[in-house]
Image (cartoon, rainbow, N blue to C red; front, side, top):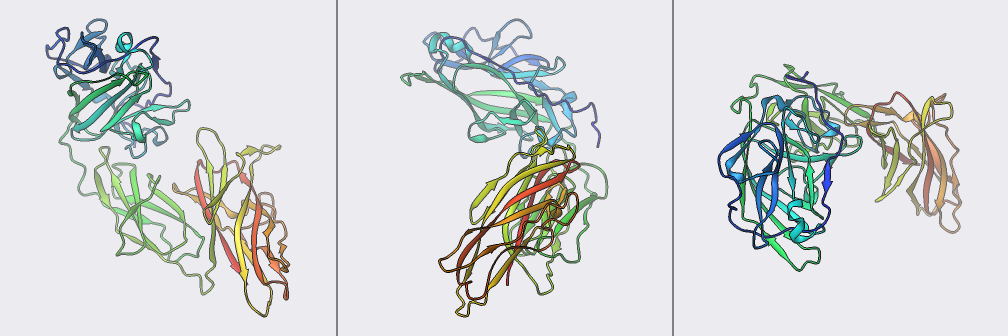
Length: 490
């Protein structure tokens, strides 16, 4: 879908002016100097949550604006902050948005847009009475409105940074300042209508000896648009590309197909059986959901509109496994990431609670592939058979997949097996090295020996591992990839 009004314009720059000098204070009724005449603003610089100091040194919350003058202070209840309909954006990049936020929002950017409201917060006015190293908590305890209110900052590459205590992304929540500061942020509203925020502030001196809490205030945002607009009710949703059956370790790449192109925001859900509870799949927001098949399950997709209201829900589909009588053991999980902002590939292996992270992805000397190395450990073989007939353990990686449907074929992985430990009297030999199949061969996509013990010297416990090497094509899609090592012992 394309934007209804303009192109997405998420900002990357950070804006925060730090206080130089002193303090902040406690609670009192509205101050005589705060203007109480009703007014509304839809553009300009607004310190929405402004910490002001009363004559007795306590603090109060008011609103400070630079629209009608310079640092004009008003009572919060007298001001309507209007978010124009032109702030509405569709198809905002999800990589730049908070976790769980829809890609369609009434969006007020971190850096000032002269055509929109630029709200922030400011505690610097309390510096003279409390000291610049005082701490402030601005607590938004309640939001009464038609949708959610998101608040976040942006890193150097546009990645979302939380501004609320406990890692929260939306109100209710607490803005915690470890020193007095003037700050701005990205704001996102999920629905049109009127929002009333219940807010209270507390300041504590740097030595902890003094504290002050403001009166509770109410701030009003009016988001323009049709608040009564309902999502389409006749849209249906189906799931395509479901295999008749899968082998353990196969890649499933499902695609949700709506009957009408009304939105591109999806969530995927899985459950172990028809009697189990649905669980949302983390990070799966597009029409395609890819994963490694390790167990039988059901999957469904739900399509949402820009206000995160469900438009359509698919019928569950069954993921059926048939290994034709040769079901392998499920070994360690492998995860590979290709971040959008750094072009780095990280491989980790988890076995029995342990994990290993490979080196960052770097281009080869010939600049024709990504390369990464690391190690795998924790594959344990125990033989207690009195006849000590010997054993051989093999492994394979069919593929790795991202939740967005990207696939990294297992042939691009190679390994050099090693014996991590073995019992006294046991003879264990590591399997031969297998090169990645980037240039030729099949890598460890096919069964490859990890280690073996001969007859007569196989009894005991051996821990096997391998040095992993990845040589991946430069055309792989950005994303987080996951796969499993399948293990057999015969």
